[in-house]
Amino acid sequence: MKFLPGPHNEIFRHYKDLSAFVRGELEKHKEDWDPSAPRDYIDSFLAEIEHNVHDPEAGFDEFNLVMCALDLFLAGTETSSTTLRWALLYMMKYPDIQEKVQAEIDRVIGQSQQPTMADRAKMPYTDAVIHEIQRMGNIVPLNMPRIASKDTTLGGYFLPKGTSVLAILTSVMFDKSVWQTPDTFNPGHFLDADGKFVKHDAFMPFSAGKRVCLGEQLARMELFLFFVFIFQKFSFSPVQGVELNLEGQIGTTLTPVPFKICASLR
Picture 1 (tube, one colour):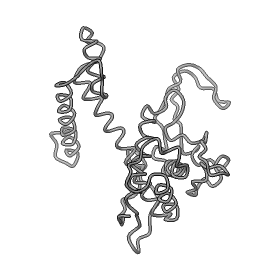
Picture 2 (cartoon, rainbow, N blue to C red):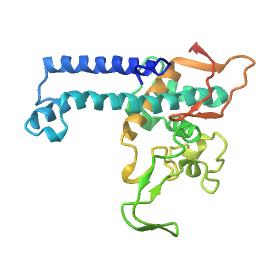
Picture 3 (cartoon, rainbow, N blue to C red):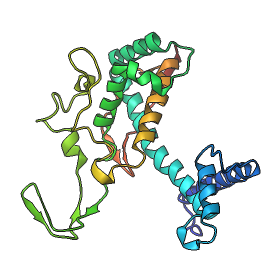
Picture 4 (cartoon, helix red, strand yellow):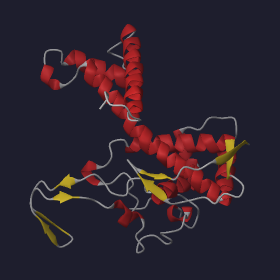
């Protein structure tokens, strides 16, 4: 493919640039690496390379280190950035909700202090809004296929060993028997009568069970920190006279249709 002309070559160029960046970071880490005090993922992987130096089948080598680091970049970037695009879209669509989020940010953090994960427990409304963005954005409507490891029965249906199973997460995220207003953006789905944040069993954008997304905790952290920081500094509104389109388009994930925004410093 890389020898054929076309826009796909941009992918190969980005891949080459990212690989070079990771390899550069790897070399920097090796200069002052202390195996007794790992600082991050690269340090920990280097320790495993040294520990498994006589076992080539273990898979711990510098090539796999670079590939695994790229996985973290690519897998985490697509889903988190798409969710944040939905966040911008919904906050422009519902400016009253945007104002409430910013009021809570100002009250808890202020406009000069950077947000931390310790702030999330003190910001139930913002947390609820982020969860509702994930529910309505529904960026992975059809989960990855799984295979039954043994004969089993699910919902009254017999599934022989080897059966492929696809979890349709949309059916859960918009279930009329579970959500009060399934087709309407409503942060109240994640708030109790006292305005405290409540978890919801039917909320599963990362899937569920043993095969739940490995990056769930990282993604939750990224979404909260990025979302709060963005709306701490900026207010967003649609271009005058342009109707916002909340319909998604299918790709690697369900993404918003491209849109323009007006961003103003607060």
